[in-house]
Length: 172
Image (tube, rainbow, N blue to C red; front, side, top):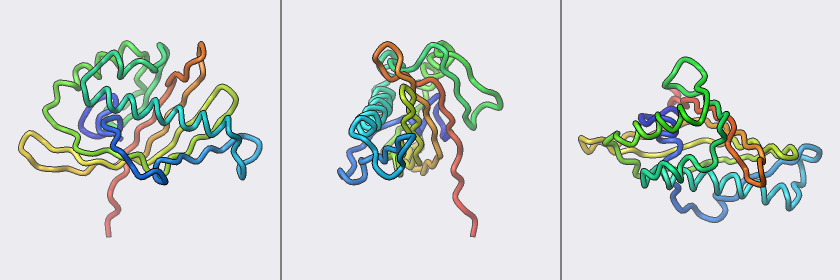
């Protein structure tokens, strides 16, 4: 990502209803890339549901709900900072400060989701596309390449690491 907002910015903003076919993630199990199991499909659906719920909570500026599935030892790489960000506490501080941004996310979509399942670990990769409206009323597109790593802890899928990278528009 990194779009104008902190932590999740434009990447983690609003989940907009997509056509059913567009919402279907590809689930890729470790042993057989051709035929994901129903368990792997369920994991894929769950980590995407968690991600979209986080986006919705951020749109509502609900800090508790937005950070619900972030592990205490969470780490993140993004385009806003030159170093790895470490810990849920830091991310919550940055998220809270980001809520003061006057920009409004108009739309956000998860494109090409792929979930790779490795036992109690799931890796979600996707492209993000969105549109943000600034205080001046000008709309700005957002694009990003995203990776989120989830680990099942205490029966819940927790986000332990994310990497949000810019996806610049190609030059002709």
